[in-house]
Image (cartoon, rainbow, N blue to C red; front, side):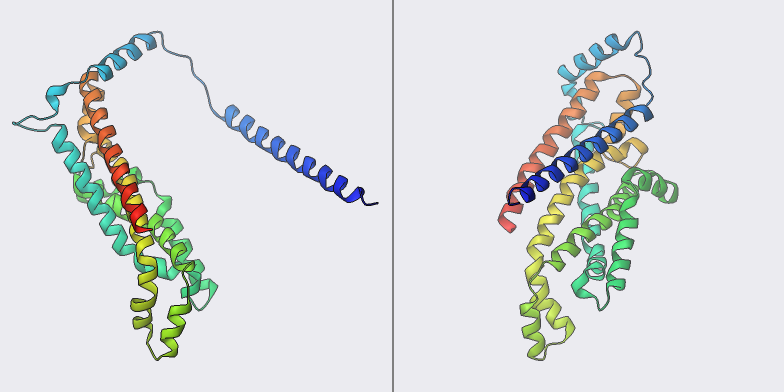
Length: 266
């Protein structure tokens, strides 16, 4: 009798494992059947070789052009779009974060509605928002800033809300017992606890925004993506190579700097 329970448990674990494996296999089969694989073009090898030749021999003269648009100006525009978009979202998402936090609401229905709003906001991809804002304000970096700022509200608001839910309520209860009002409790007890995590999440979002800003120019929202799409359309692979190299270097530096700062904050 003593050996039956472990045997049953072991058998049930095997059943769950094979059920999960079968479910995963069915999902992969469904995904493969849903994708139509077309034939490879006859000149695909020549095009691939031309792309790699351009990437391995980038156009270094495009790094800086005194008379007009160049790589450095495009990278700086991309960084400016990412900085402004992240700043806007970091400020505007604060009320949404406190709205969505369970421990900040009197009812779960209130916090649940806040979570639904944040989910709805981050449902729209940056490219879709960029196209919409281009129609509203015209092409250029301003549309990219608005697209990144609005999309980042949903993601940063979710992360901020989770940080608020995980904070210690002891200091706030102590201040409330001493006669502090809600604003004083929020300012002196809640914000000091969550501010380092807020800054860490903001830096992490800035890393993502730099990558996104580099792509938004493809639809006309400014940044380095605009000359990139022109170079791709003209099949100027050396120009594409130097732009891609500039994006890689910029993103790598920002990743290392952001990781260092986040380790210091948290």
